[in-house]
Length: 153
Image 1: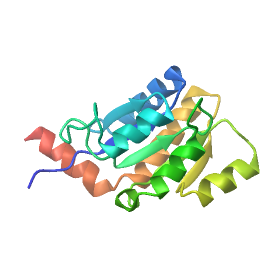
Image 2: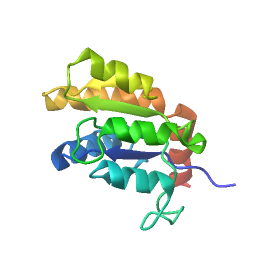
Image 3: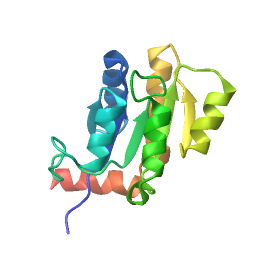
């Protein structure tokens, strides 16, 4: 049986934020695979493994999902509600990164199944540190180590 490579799915409509989140995750764990969905619909399509995301080798089930709340059309709340309705995704941790400081947004996101809700810092170094903290908390250390050793051999 092969080693599962940790996979991060970033669902974020701001392309610059998505790139920074992926870069920060790869800095703290060079073996992680990062996929970016620029909106809620594409994020759900990835998670449902529908075309063009129907190749399970290329589009593996994510180990972690980083989700923005405020996106056009299908927002993060809608994505969380959609994920919650799928028992096969119950074990995939979804962590919200948002610029919202409204307590009701955090409450609603947690009620809809977010494992964590964090406010996006404006400072890039702080954002990198936050992503490192999230990846270290939600991606099993054993999985990270196994994938690093597998890539060496």
